[in-house]
Length: 100
View 1 (cartoon, one colour):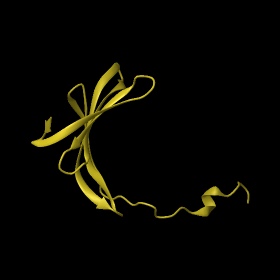
View 2 (tube, helix red, strand yellow):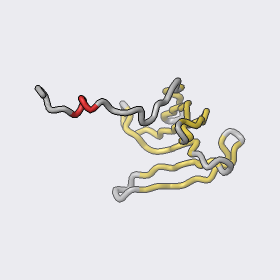
View 3 (cartoon, helix red, strand yellow):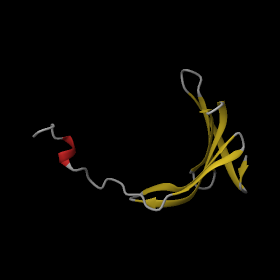
């Protein structure tokens, strides 16, 4: 299958309850460039697609910085990530018991 002139392989993942997701994997890069699955919409189940692009390396991980969401073929979201920070540390005070 091709996605925006890129050859992709399709992997179908199904859990024990029968819920399934199709992952479209770019044959050249190995990146997941699209997901398709059923989700709950305001008026019942919808066919949802998430298309990923603008892949960049962050702390050794390649992550998409743009996601377009379609529901029943209609675009409902177009999000761009400005900055990703990974493993920046967690303030130990967040785990302190109240009043300590």
